[in-house]
Length: 74
Image 1 (spheres, rainbow, N blue to C red):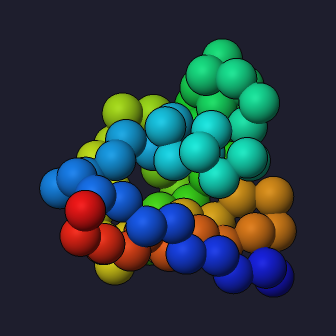
Image 2: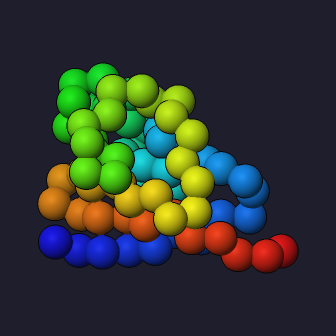
């Protein structure tokens, strides 16, 4: 499984935004369908909330890839 860290400057990022930012979904609609279809895990559990707020330390799994949310300062 590929593991990538996506650094954010804000307090949180929404799940659908993270999927687009990481290139795991080409469009918001694709991200929405993937999340609502139960294909995405957050911290090891299936998550169907596309607007779920992810904070640094959270881990997302989708299409055999793993993304960890990191925090960076501007």
